[in-house]
Amino acid sequence: MSPARVGVITFPGSLDDRDAARAVRIAGAEPVPLWHADHDLQGVDAVVLPGGFSYGDYLRAGAIARFAPLMAELVPAAHAGLPVLGICNGFQVLCESHLLPGALLPNAGLHFVCRDQRLRIDNVATAWTSEYAKGQEVVVPIKNMDGCFTADAATLAELESSGRVVARYLDVNPNGSLGDIAGITNEAGNVVGLMPHPEHAVESLTGPTTDGLGFFTSIVKRLVNA
Image (cartoon, rainbow, N blue to C red; front, side):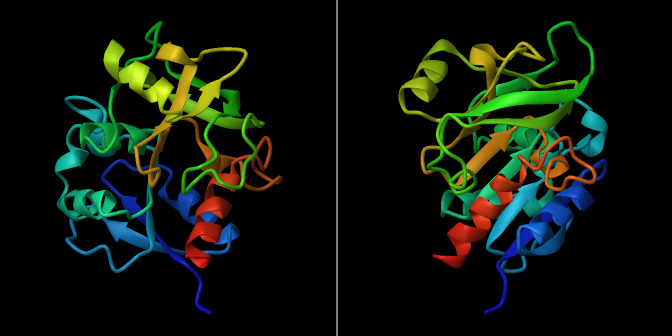
């Protein structure tokens, strides 16, 4: 049986595309490089939008990347059920593309934050979190300047009542995100946005833990068993 194929998009300014590809490979899938200016998703089974500073974060973080030609293919595919994970800048792109609600604003205090961060996984029903236990605490790195998740009161209430908060910050809220929200999902559970970087916590040699690997093994298990 051929391995699941997970696309990793590279935008101008992406920094973590190779790290995401390595995480996909370690999890047992085949990483497929996708270029922002193409119009072809190459038949991949899932897609990761990696961290970085797409288009230099001009206008707003992720605001220009949403208009990339490949996003015109990704948005309808995600609506049709394609699993998509947006990490950091990828989360910002998903919000700008209206695949996820809310917005990511400059951090409270207006400082870049880089630290190992403790999280709690609150939703294990998504395509990207099924390998965790509900309430499981993990440690993964976080590094962002525009990581403050915000949304209007009605949207926040809906996210909370429907269990669409995927992960929350513990101990310290590093960027002022409302509700200590570190990640959310869409209603269907196939699209997840996460501000911390699980791809930097998939092997003991380079990560503070291997706690991030579950995001990638979750999608591999989902695809293999589909």
